Image (cartoon, rainbow over all chains, first blue to last red; front, side, top):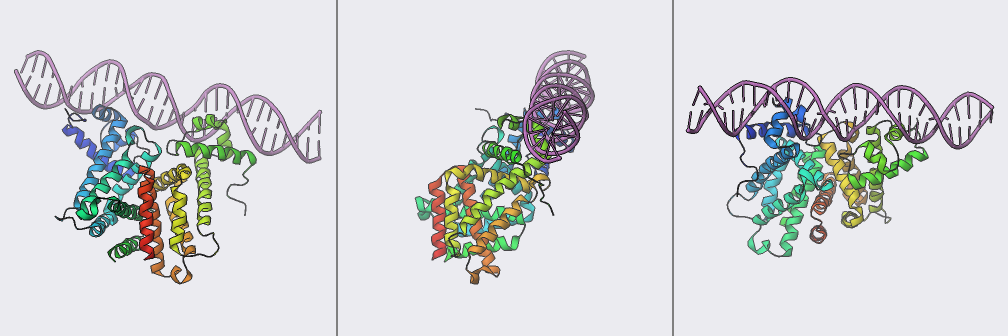
Length: 192
Length: 192
DNA sequence: ACGTAACTGAAACGACTGTTTCAGTGCCGC
DNA sequence: GCGGCACTGAAACAGTCGTTTCAGTTACGT
């Protein structure tokens, strides 16, 4: 069975990378082929040739963003053995709070809520997919005794909620001190 | 000094209410005057006459949504004396988790993230404004001894993060049991 | 050298966008 | 009756949208 995107040619990934950078800067909501093409030194004709349609391009951009996301999730469980939710949340938050990741996180938030309002088209299922990605990654960080069973799922859900809620606050207010203190406060609560 | 919207005429509020119902069902992202006008039995001509421009209409819709939001916030602190963050979060979450409020909450999430990506235009400042609204409402629920000082602000921030993060999860997965259990788990943590 | 495939430029297509122009309604105070 | 005010319908405006058509150009295997 061939891949869904038959063969990502060199030119294709090159343009995708440029378009991704453009999307990080300008958002996906009112992305338009002509301004995008001009900004990355291409043409609408070529983008449609390589990605089939605008929806195909958006899907490719969303997949590209998700690649960055799974890289982050991999880092959360990385230091060999899973050591519990608390250090996992700590590490992930350090990443989320870093200033240089904010364009990606804004893009992610945009795609997330868009897929809630408009469950069809290129955005379909994005929100649900990322929730499942994150919960699975957090599960990998739980000790086996805690991982299974409903209580473990609840703890993962809570950890994810704190991270997401804090991220939303941070993106809106840029008040890293207050928000990071709130996350730290939660970690202290969880440790006690 | 006259109001910003000089006089919301009867016809204006009537059409706004209809447009609001339409926006709750279809979202604001690709709202378009002609389909909207036809759905609510009006015309683009009239909408522009009454609201000045499409941006004016969107601003009015956002303000209308915010009216629902402040009503909710008022309910959080209502039972006479503020009694601490824990019961406040409990009450607010019961409201957020109610099925019938989901269209409003989707609309709210959409406006929130949109204002993050595109800080100009009709959406400007929406995210920051709601964060401040909510933090202020939660502050009113804290006992005076806790309200002031940095520790109080951190506790409010954490409470808000849990509510927002849990809401995002709920909107994506519709798994009320798991998410409500996570909120309850946090409340138990806070009580101990 | 030739054919074939990948890629590209220029221009047009029809549909849709917010907005404007012009021409009216109906109603209310005088 | 009449002037003005709030509101409305029909049609057009200029612009942008995604997409298509047609005509190339480049590079490479054979």
